[in-house]
Every structure is written in structure tokens, then in C-alpha cells.
Length: 339
Image (cartoon, rainbow, N blue to C red):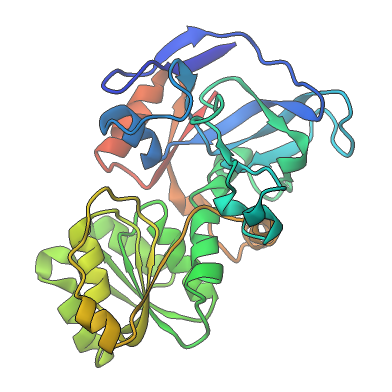
């Protein structure tokens, strides 16, 4: 099969022939229809973040496709079934999985990090981890549900605990932040979107934001406090920068909650006294639990969450490096590779 192989940071992915993977007991082989391009891939390529399994490795963790082969012992799936692969595989038996917090599984394995991913014609996955994609969801767009939708779904629903009537600020409306906007809006919140790109702010309004703030116009936290009479109930940081984390914290009212989604190696200078006196709550959010995928898929299939506006670029596998470069330059919202 053809695959885009990662050989280490600072080097483009190499399109090469790789062995077609064979499904073992309990596994299926999926013919990849599409794989979303994520900033996580750029951490490996550009920022020196190591993959758990050393290169050579096939990247790509947002995949959809059809089952091409079924391994021994697999029940309930057959060749041709339309499927979504979760970005992360969980063990189901560690303490966190048994507590229902599989997204922080102690033994998690991630496509394109611990195991070969989906910048390839085929990928192998445990059958128990697959999710059915209904016909109402195009495979070429549905792949982004695996991360760009599931991560904000978990953040809004389970970590930030957004409720009807909440005021919410979303710092960074890229591929993840825009979905925080529409999922928080669906939950009944009044959402303020913050970004540096006017076109993304315009799309945030289309997806439900009632106000938008361009960071070029000055400190966004000051404008948010003025707009809301003291600050928002909940702020999401979906960028991964120290300064943005500080601004998001500064946009909160007394008793507010900050939900950190963006990965950052920087340490923000948070005011400890204000966090204590105002009872500011700071929570992290990682990925999504398996139990949350089915209701999320149903919301997308029913049209209550918009998928099409998020997929703005489509690239054949031979141009995977162009897709990554578009992500690097902030071109579009979510690009997908179509093997």
C-alpha cells in the first residue's frame, strides 16, 4: 500500500510503499477514505515533540473509511461497513477506564503516535473501538469527528459543564475552537469568539457566536469584561499559548471556569491571589470518552452540528505535505487527506 511515513522531526513525510497491514484476532483492516490534518502532527514534525513509538511511523489520527477485511473472532462488523476510528484506543481495564474516564486511560494508544496511523491506504484497528458512520455523514468530511469534533464535545459537555444561559468565551477559533462555538451554542450558551483571523471570526458567527473579538483591536479580556459586565462564566483556550491562557483567565467573572484544550509547553503567569479570592476553577480537557461518540455522531447526522463548513481543503495522499503546510500557515480550517 501507499503511505506517508514520518522519519523524524524537521523532515517532510515520505510517500512510500509499505506492507498492507493484516488484521489480527479482534481487529479489522479499514480502507481509509479520509484522514484529517491536525496541529498535533506539526508538534512531531516542527516542534521536536517525540512520538511514543520511534520513527519510522505513519502519522494521522482522524480517520474514516470502510472495512476491507475482518480478523478472527470479530462479530458485528462486515466488509464494506462505514466506520469512524477514534483518535485514541483505550485499554478498558485500568483504573481510569473503570471509572469511566477512558480519555485519560493509563495505557492509551494513539494512531500516528503509538501505532501506525491513517495517512495511508489502509489502517488496522480493534473492532471494539470502531463507530458506525451513517449514510447521512460523508466519509470525506466525517473523519474530523474523530478529534476536531469529539475533543470539543468532551470539553463543553463533561469538563466545562456548559449549561443553558451560560456566557462563554472561546479563545482561538480554528478547527477545534469553531466546534467549541457550535457545541456550546447548542448547549444553550451565549458565545463570544476570539481570534486573529477575520475569516474565522466570520465563520464563528455563522456557527452561533453572538459576538466576535479580533485580538488586533486590543486585549480581548478587557472587551469581554466590558461586554458582559464583569466577565464570562466559562472560557475555553484552544490555542496553546501562555499569553492566550492568561487572557482567557482574565476574561472570567468571579466563580468562573477556565477549560484548557490547547497543548502548550509554556507556563502562563496566572494570578494566584485572584484564582483564590474569586474561586476561579481551571480544568484540563483531553480527547473524548468512547461513550460520547454515538450521541455526537447522531447530532452531526441530524444536522444539529455543521460539518461541511469545517472541511475547507482536500488533498490526495501524494500531497500530504502540502496539506500539512496549509495547516502550518493557517490556511483554511480543517484539511483532509484522501488516500
